[in-house]
Amino acid sequence: MKLTGKQKRFLRAQAHHLNPIFQVGKDGVNDNMIKQINEALEKRELIKVSILQNCMEEKDDVAEALAEGTDAYIVQIIGNTIVLYKESEENKQITLP
Image (cartoon, rainbow, N blue to C red; front, side):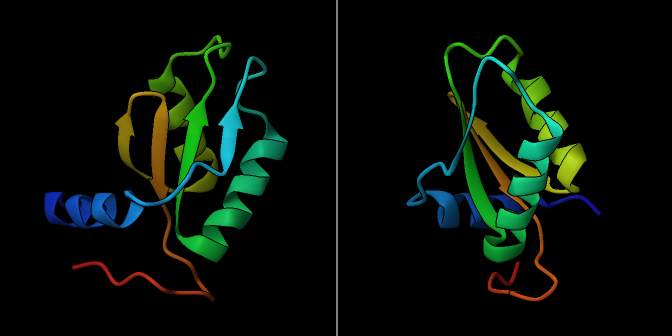
């Protein structure tokens, strides 16, 4: 399943007031980070991840690696911030239009 434009717009509006809770630094994406982000997505469904300036990888590659590792959707990449969404199995809070 892919997110529609309307769903992405809705999720961007929901994510606007959120602060990034993870940072990707010079080490890039690793298994531990993916595990923690997956747990955060299960609790919150929608999170922001910021990419630090010392990160050697491209932000698109980082976003792709996080999305694949967590089975999440990339809602938006704006500046050095990635917005990820994954429907929660136990803590469902967001209903997509």
